[in-house]
Image 1 (cartoon, rainbow, N blue to C red):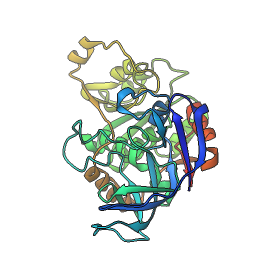
Image 2: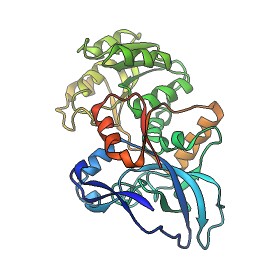
Image 3: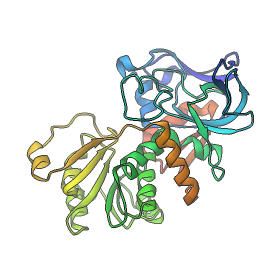
Image 4: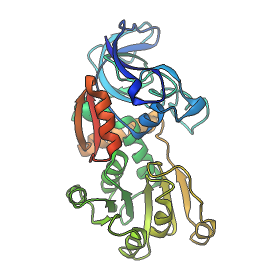
Length: 335
């Protein structure tokens, strides 16, 4: 089979497409013919070696999110049959309950091999059925970005009458926009170009703000609501938290889900205290939460936003496109 591999993590220049023997499932495992994958910013961090001791540093198959078809079941597998369409869980050992070090220790494309390959073995508890209305490409967008956005919005009680601020047009941000709308909330969205802002309007954003033209966009977002936004889904990290604090209402929540604009920030603690703000980290979720998200998407017939689809042979170009920031939605790989 073909697969992508990094002999040593550190640079996209070390990414190669190679041939390898097809794996076989063991007890309690299934063999999946991977049909599609999607890229996340965290994959770029892993390729650069940015997760330190929490990732494999040699002979790593990258990319966390994939979907495909079960082609073989191992001994002691009762819940799956060949031919079923499945999507992998981001944390294969976190089935339910709160996170713990043990439950989140394994993550594909980081501490263990990912899905940039034609065949991959999964534990039978580490995959879920693909909703019938979704393609393999669409399903592959869900494990990391989709579930992170679900936890950052619906998981925090987003509902009718609330206002949610999203940032940019990446995968997590667009999922957050869609899930907030699904829950009945109004969305204010930011981006950096007129074209992207029009896409956000078309997806249902009630208000849009060009953060390049308006460097004080947090204040602008606050003024669009009676008392400030109920929730900010912050994907920027160090460079955006100041504006997120300005946008959020007193007693509101900032769900911190990314660091695309910087990992470090000098927190203005007095503002957090005076506004009684909750800063909530959101790092994907467990299998039961993933199943609930998939059920909601099936009920609402919700489709993810896909930007471009690359073949596996062009995986490096796909990563470069992701890193460029030109995408609107998910960058995907057809395998």
